[in-house]
Length: 396
Picture 1 (cartoon, rainbow, N blue to C red):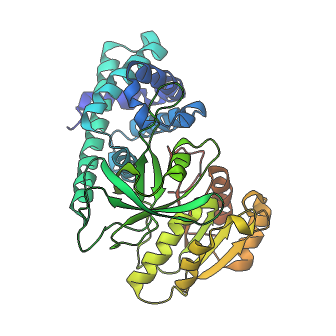
Picture 2 (cartoon, rainbow, N blue to C red):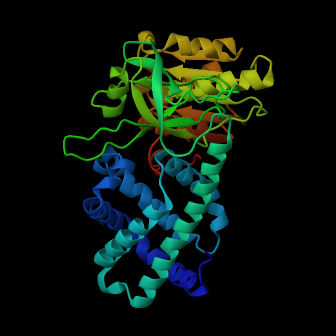
Picture 3 (cartoon, rainbow, N blue to C red):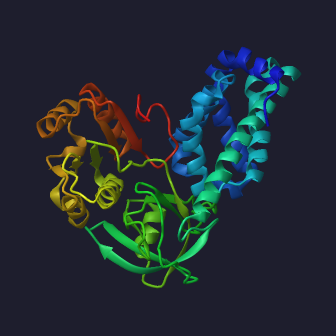
């Protein structure tokens, strides 16, 4: 639904006034909505509420939308990212009306008498306009996921058929559909995409535990689908996965994600830390298979605190691709920006290259700045959660 000229004018004229209050609005919004609709906790990781990451991400999205209300084309990448995350969580059109109603109530409460009927109507129309954009984008993604080999729509039951321990806390899990319906061509997906796993658990407060995203580490065309997961201290879903035994069943949504690396891309650089190695392994395997040649010009660097923390079986996939691999174990994840810059510079020349980045948020924020300072043409990253400008500035 196209926005009316009046709505565009209202939002454009008030965007600068609303922007300073955007985070106060979203901090008001989430407790309001989740208090009235606790079933929606299945979409929201409580940790992201406690750290204010979710409200901050929504506030930034609202400000970006309002600031570009008359030129929405510039928000294409942001819309793609939001729609992709929403599809993994199985957000549906009916959820947007709930968001609209509660968000507008928060706008009215925070801004008070400043919200005239005309302003309220304009912003209400704009919120539903953004909902329409996302609904359309998500339907396109849902259809595409369903049409791929082995694809499906919605939540689907998968059975654990194999579990391989990689390190003390990292294991690779292989799943097959409980219904046994796997085409001869196996599961199709794009390297770097993730599965979304719903544990079906409730927390100590009786609320649904939000699903988690895990990179697929099997290859496209395999008859099973794999993810490699680190058991985190206090991590409800990762701990649940690690407690599973053969034959146990869990719900998963189809592969989604826009953190991908085209096979035709020349000379990329991949930098990971901790369990952030998983998408890099996926890139190495798929790029090697599609190019049918060693990845002689690709550079992979992986950082871990100690050698025993690195899943060597995953590292071997990178080595088999023919790419250059430069692991760092000298307290790599917590080294200073200066030392990280020296380590990267001694291993490869980053200037003019596309760099891919995955690891803990604090590491990525530091590493992105280092890569940009070293002349990377573009830095792309995956953080699996709500994206804020504070996570990694100047990246995509």
